[in-house]
Image (cartoon, rainbow, N blue to C red):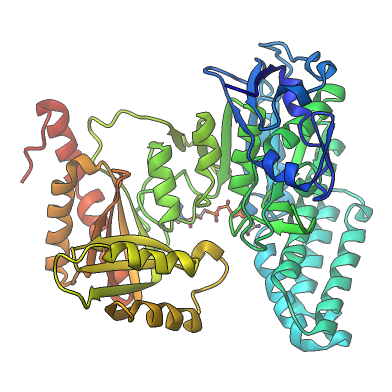
Length: 561
Ligand SMILES: Nc1ncnc2c1ncn2[C@@H]1O[C@H](COP(=O)(O)OP(=O)(O)O)[C@@H](O)[C@H]1O
Ligand SMILES: N[C@@H](CC(=O)OP(=O)(O)O)C(=O)O
């Protein structure tokens, strides 16, 4: 392949050293903006079995001629015991107080054989409070901005945490001043743009990581704090829902590995945050985005395992807020976990499985409140012999469209026309069921996860579709996703429909994706939670699945009727 070269790992890491849109340095060469865009498309493939130490095959559109020889000279030898080994990500609930931070520190240090990169979210519900403070600032007037309740609560929590951990206030007082100033500016401008929102919520992770790193240092575990936007997390400029760009991987690897080799200290990295490649402003990866930060670091450094520590015993058979009897799922594939996250399970960020899947790095979901629980292990493949249904997921407040062609049967190109309308309007679709002349589909407003599909946009969609079809708009619908082994779809559906019938629930659409791990059913919002509870009870709470699974293991087929 033209332009394919073998580089030492270090040379690969030396990739991107500046993200200014007009000039940057890549592998020692200056690039203009067009070259930069090309650079973003460069591919870097891990060789089989690669774990951070071997040579990488890098193909880059500018070809080998641009690579300085001296940059190939440094390599990290394979099997170097001193390399960073795992990512440990702790969510807001895991670091909600001084006591929790102490426990998390203890937990990290209880694995002395590991050299973790630690990713942290904001403390407790800080992100929600920051957003609320921002919204209040818009209409409270500059003189009242400092008195916003949520700002007071955030300040109080972080200062109390510092006090209880025996740390100096100077660690975050500059940030608290900046936060207060930002709230005043929002009050002055009387508006909260998406860009300002991201800047505002970034204070949560910036404070939690500084406090935690200072605490580790205080107890003698050398740690170094990093803001993700300063170490190469380069994203699109889609504020509140930015996508990570490929250039992130070499940049992050270079910085974290480089610092570790020069002066080992546990890296404590802000989750959730990035830097827009055009704007150079702080961006966020969508709510719950620290999971994605963790898997991105895992991929960048080729680490052995990615651990995400939550407040539940792993991924459960259902949202415990809906089904308190939900139990942990011991094993999942990346495909199952991705589907589960995409279709609404809050426990994992919808995009977080991608970097792990691309590099085949196992993800372990664990409970920081109950570290001895085995948690959930997510890998590329698992033994599906006895697997039927893994988990039930609910996504509510969905919009559904029934679209019936005004042309006659046999008219080709109908589907293409309908989807070109969605494409033009930049709206993606979740579930689809089609016949030759009609389509039912659910809309995903989450290209921008932060906003709901607003009425104006819906009107526009309807207007365009009505040029070729009769359209029925159905709002307040829910998607119930049955994640499992679709090889047994008849069995799953038979059981599910007996539950629907017993509960007098009308299913309005069914869709079975090509992923073979998900059957989606659409019902009305008002019936959805009851329906999920009934399904969970039927599948998981009365021995049904264990009986069928036993049949499968003994007879090779499900005899159960
Ligand atoms: N299928 C599921 N399995 C586990 N937790 C779930 C599931 N669906 C929803 N949840 C909710 O997700 C929460 C954990 O996710 P999240 O709050 O993002 O954790 P963290 O902030 O610790 O990263 C749990 O407390 C639980 O209420
Ligand atoms: N603090 C951000 C990012 C995040 O990932 O949080 P958590 O890990 O607590 O879900 C949020 O609340 O969205």
